[in-house]
Amino acid sequence: MDGQICFCGRVEKINCSWTTSNPGRRFIGCEHYGKPGACGYFMWVDTSMCDRARVVIPGLLRSIRRLEAQVRREKEMQMYLVVALITSWILWTCGGLS
Ligand SMILES: [Zn+2]
Image (tube, rainbow, N blue to C red; front, side, top):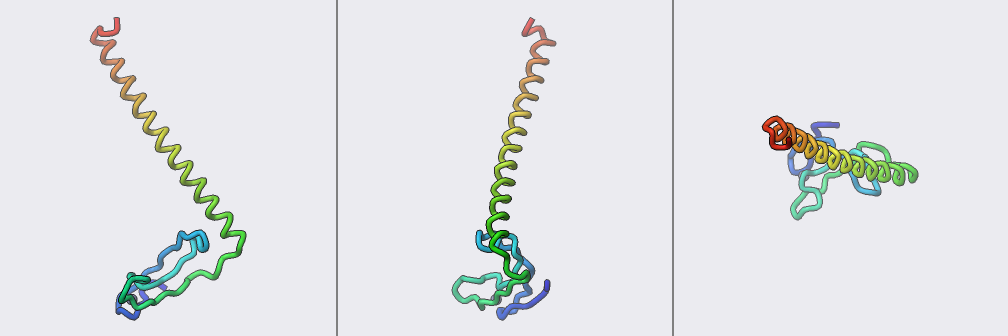
């Protein structure tokens, strides 16, 4: 499927839709699809999705994004604690906390 050429003459690659109606469904299309002057070339690579997948996949994506945000916050807190620990060691070894 990769390497197809749209009516504008551009080589197209496979993209992935992340809309709620077609989450994760692959397609190829004109790079400028939907913009003025675009050729309008568009074709689904995958078959249509069942209704259950349209509900489950967006829910899973929301869960992943929520967990990724939680991991980012935890890493920030971990970095803060490491800096606080190193600072306290430096102050202690220099006699600042004795
Ligand atoms: Zn085109």
